Structures are given as C-alpha cells and as structure tokens.
Amino acid sequence: MNNRLKVLRAERDWSQSDLADRLAVSRQSVNAIETGKYDPSLPLAFRIAELFALPIEAIFHAPTKG
Amino acid sequence: MRRMNRPQKRYVQRVFVSMIFYIAFLSVALHYVGRGLVTGPLAYILGALPGFAVIGVFWAIGRLLVEETDEYQRMLLVRQSLVASAFALSIATVWGFLENVRLVPHIDAFYIAILWFAGLGVGSLVNRLTLGSTGDCR
Image 1 (tube, chains in turn cyan, brown):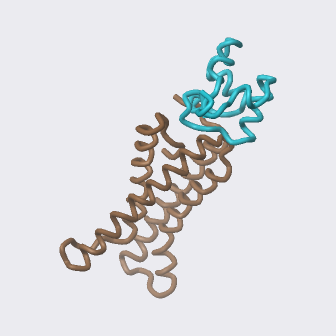
Image 2 (cartoon, rainbow over the protein chains, first blue to last red):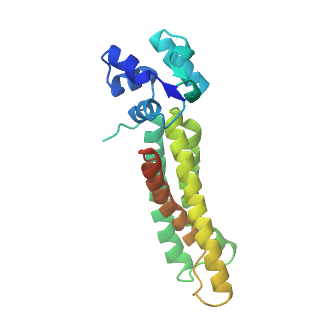
Image 3 (tube, chains in turn cyan, orange):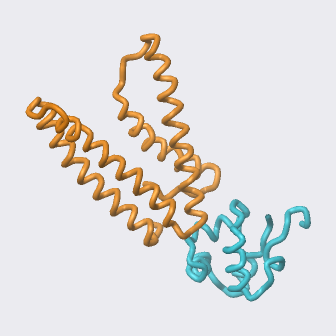
C-alpha cells in the first residue's frame, strides 16, 4: 500500500520522531510505514488520518492506483 | 539509542528478575542436588527450579507480546520469535536423529532453550536484513 505520509509530515515540518510521538508509536514504525515496509492496521490508519485531519483514502492508496 | 516504551522497560525488568532467580536457583540445585545432599521429591523440586526461572523469561516475552502497544514493534517480535522457534526446533530435530544413530553425542534437553534464545538473535538479524529494523528482545 502506498501512502503520502512523508509528504504530509514534511508539509508540517515534522521529523519522524515528532510524528511518532504524536501517534504514540516508535520512530521505527513511522519509518516502516513511510517506506512501505509495513502497512498499518485500520485503527492506526484512522489515528494517522485524524492527526492530519484527512480521510484515510487521502493518505493511503492501493499500489494499483499508482 | 532507541528509547524504550513502558512494556519494553517492564520486559527488561522481568528478564532481570528471572535471571537473578536463575542464578540463585541454579546455585541451590547444584549445591544440594548435585552433591547428593537432598534426595527424593525435594530433589526433583530443587533440580527443576532453574528451569522455572528460565520459564520466567519465556513468560516475560509472552507478556511483552501482549502488552506492546506499538503494533510494528509487536510484529517484529512475533517474527523474531517465529524465527527463534524454527531455528531451535530444526537444530534439535536434526540433532535428535543424528543422536539416534549415534553419530553425535547426547546433549542435555535444556540446550533447546539456549538455542531458542540464540534464535532470537537470528530473528533480529532476519528483521534487520528484510525490514531494516530489529526486534524488542535483546
């Protein structure tokens, strides 16, 4: 699954650690999600969406949709 | 160095306490049972005590799996544990068959636990090579 997490984070001038603290996860988790090595669970995806005040589909999208 | 969250700190504390009990129980078992100072049912109990301390480490790992709130870290630990299980059971199985046909000497069964702990290291390496991250069990 592809995502815009890195872009959204950069727009807010947050480091991976900043985002990790806001989501109450490790920096490794943020890095793994950003690099596509790990797809978050639905609850974590919702937390990310709430944090950025965006719908989930504005952050995550299927690889088939580019 | 990566910060530890609360479940990870509890895990380290639990392993530390288990290791203290392990050293104490092993000393008691070697002194009283190893030298034949105690026999009968009490000898079995004292002799098994170090094993229960090692079970404490397994329990600590199990609790970490349950209490870990970071789902990615939990996934790393699950992968690490699965690799450790595959590593230990594979070597124990092959060794058992070789021992059965007398090609290798007999090895005490508790070495399977040691192999499993070594397997956690292998699992950590596998996580590092495939995902770029290690796990929680150090």
